[in-house]
Each structure stands twice: as structure tokens, then as C-alpha cells.
View (spheres, rainbow, N blue to C red):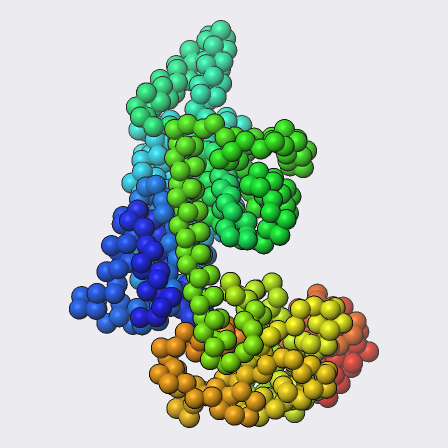
Length: 605
């Protein structure tokens, strides 16, 4: 078990919530839920009780992230949302492969109301998700009873010549045979929508007006219909012990964390826990908490594209509350209230946010402490005159020499400085020449830093052996950078983790029991991060190249005509076998353009 993972397990909460298991590249392997996070996650590491599949998962786990929730329902929904977001490989055995159900109202002239699972590809309105399918089904049956909305699919609806049994038992108004006008039916759909939005009082008020109007016009059957609807709605309201809210609320917690400002954001949308974020920034001006929160609110909400809340819950009153509310209201054309005095479920959300924020801060401080110890150990190992406060590492990624990408990652004594990461396209070198690629990337990087007078690293790590080190040293010498210590980390002959070779200049550094040494673990961690960042960039570049067609290179051939050509000939291979005369038969392609296309295809293919 790695040190990172061991520390994750020690810091687990005993509350209900969800957990994400990540590999060394920070990819999500598995998302799960638990009534007790500590007990559930710890059970994965009792090797005597694991089956083969679970053991295979556990071998890949490098770290674990958790989020506490108030209820198991919240954990269920949050788990499902995270699975959809991350597509973890070990969640493919999700029970029945079903997502949480929604209630769907179609966008047809006579809309259908039904239960829906899966992709939201059909036009209409979706309400949910519902943690339990039974709850969603009961709600659909209730709405059909209340508002007489159809349940049949469009294929059946369009071919009916007489009402079905649902009309006879008063569960449908038979729009299939025009027993109800589109306007009247749409009014019932609007009531169903209001009901699902939690606005049943507005429905009853509207129905009461219609009942009185029908009664005054001596339309007693219609008045009785509205009266029955009002009665059923009142019975539903009285039977509900807890009202469902549709609130959009954010909770913000801020703390001082050593020399940094820490901000935690808990998001509730439609009364459901959507997720959380945290932000850590250097607080060089030592702003107090109220200033930190005010700055965060302005920066985050004015730039964020996410759905804005109607209310922001804070721990402490801000001196600029009125001003901030005014700015937000003007920007988003609806009021956003900043509140500190909250009760009932809002108080529960505030306490939940405080608890999660405290756990994250403790984990971050523990991680910073471990990094500082590792940096001190590295200074001692390399016999450096001072602590290497900034370390950079380069790696090259390509597939048999194609689409080469160089990546540079940066670490400080508190961990990764991801804002300083950079990728470089490698051009004009011999295919597969890693030495030339390293030389080009290092020279690009430090030429740029010197021009901008940006801080240089104390230690430069190259993922490679003596050849790569020589190429990097040559680039540094050409720039006159002699103060940077250069280190190489190369895979051993068996390419086994823990058996890497460490070079300072051209001299190999022998480390006894290397895999247990904090300094060696730090070097591995930085090298692995550089490899992850490089290979991610390389994959993106390959994807971009695969989407580029030879037709893109032909001037005056736009997307529309390119699409017509590929559709008509069934793809690029069919187009390659066509002559210029065949190409000219396509609408919008002149004989001259057809000849140009033919010549280009057969010259460059």
C-alpha cells in the first residue's frame, strides 16, 4: 500500500457519503456510496475477503477522494452523477445498467407523460432524478389520474380510432380521438408541470377560478371536474409530511490555511446536493476572511457559466453584502441573496459544508507536510546547498515517432503547481529522435522564461538516461544557464517500478533501498506526473490529426461540399476510386473544382 493511500485511509470520515478511487494518473477507477465511509472503504483492503475482480481494482488504487452527504438518497444521486461524469471502468457492473428515473413530458401537440431512463434525447421536459423508481411511478400514475394525460406511445396514439380502457376508467381524456381540444389538454399539461415543480397551491388557485366561472355559466359537469381536481390536490398536500423544495443554493466556507486562502463551495440545485468544489490560492496580502469571500464571490460568479443560485449561505456577515447583492442582481437579472442567519435544512447544509471543508483542509495540510519532508530529504540526498523550492520535469510522448509532444510539470514545496504546466509541439526533428525533442523543448521553455524574467527551477528532472541528459545540458549551456541542477531518472533494464536509475550529470547516484526513501518517492511522483501530462497531450494531438481529412487541405472546398462528396461516394475510399467526371456530377461541384479535387487526392494520398 502506498504512503498516499495509507494517509487517505487514516483520514476517512465515519459519515455517509460517496468515495472515488483513483489511479496514479488521477483517473477515476470506481465511484461508490457508503453509510459509513471509513468502514466501507477500509473493507476493500481486507485481502482475505476480496474476490478476484475487487482485488484487481485494489491493486490499481493510488488515492481516494470522499464527499460526505446528509442522507443515503443524496449519496445515491451523487454517486450516479459522478459515474455519468467520469465513466469509471469498474462501474460497468452497475445494477441492471439503469440510471435514475425521470418523469418525462413530451413536446407533442398532445404531450405524453411517462417514466424515462437513459439519455435525454427526446424533446420535452424532464423532472427528477428520483432515487426510487417506485416513487417516480406513483407520481406518474397520480398525474394521469389528476390531469387525464395520455400514457400511450406515439405509434399507438396516431393509429387509434376509438378510446382505450384508460379513458373508460377516467385515467385519460382521449386526445387520440379528439375528445379534448389541444388548448384544454395543454392547460392540463401546464398543471402537471406546475405540480412537478412543487407549485400545487398555484394550481388550486387557478382551478378554483375556473370552477367558479364554469358554475356561473351553468356548466356544472365542467365545474364538478375542477372541484374533484382541487379535492385530490388538497388530499395530496395534507398527506405530504415533508414538502419538496426546489431551491438553488450555494454554501460558501472560507478559511485561512497557512499562507493560503481556502474556499469551499457546496452546490444545491432543485433542493438536491449537486456536488462541491474547493479553491486554494496564495494570500500574499493577508486578506481577512470577509475580504476573501467577497473577492471569491465576484470572481467566481461573474465568470462561471454554471447555473446561478438564488441564494448564497455564508458563515459570517460581509461588510459589502448590499453591494455584492446589487452587482449580482444586475449581472444576472434576478436577485441573489447572501444569508448568514439560516434554519432547518439550510442550517444542515451549512453544517455539512463546514464539516467537508474541515476534512479537506486537514488532508491538504497533511499533504503539504509530507511534500515538505520529501523536499528536505531530496536536498539531503543530492547534497544541495539550499532547499529546491521549484522543480521542473520534462517528458516526451509519441507513437513510433508520430505526433510528438513534450511536457513540462512544475512542483513546489507544497505540491504540484498546475498553472505553470506547459506542453510543446516538437517539430523539424528526425522521427523518433527523443534527444532532439528534449533539446528543443528545454530550449523553448527556458528561452521563454528568460524573456519574461520568470522564476527558474532549482532542479530540472529529465525522464530519460544519459542521452536525454546530455541533450538537456546542451540546451541549458546554449542559454547560459549554469545554476540549474540537472537530474535524470531512467527506467531499469526490466522497466520495473522501484528499479529506476538516477543520474546527476553523467554519474549514476546509488540509493540504498530506494523505494522506501522519501526523496526517491518524490522523484517518482514528479516523473509520473510528467508522463501523465505528456501522454494526455499526445493523445489529444492524435485525436486532432485523426479528425483532419485530406479534403481539408483543398482550398475553396467548404464543409458543406466536403460532406456532400463523402456522403455521395460512401467515404474517402469511394471518392479516391472516382474519376473527375464522377465528382463533377455532384451538385455544387464544377468541372474545374472536380479536376482540382481529383488531382489533389491522387497527388497527396
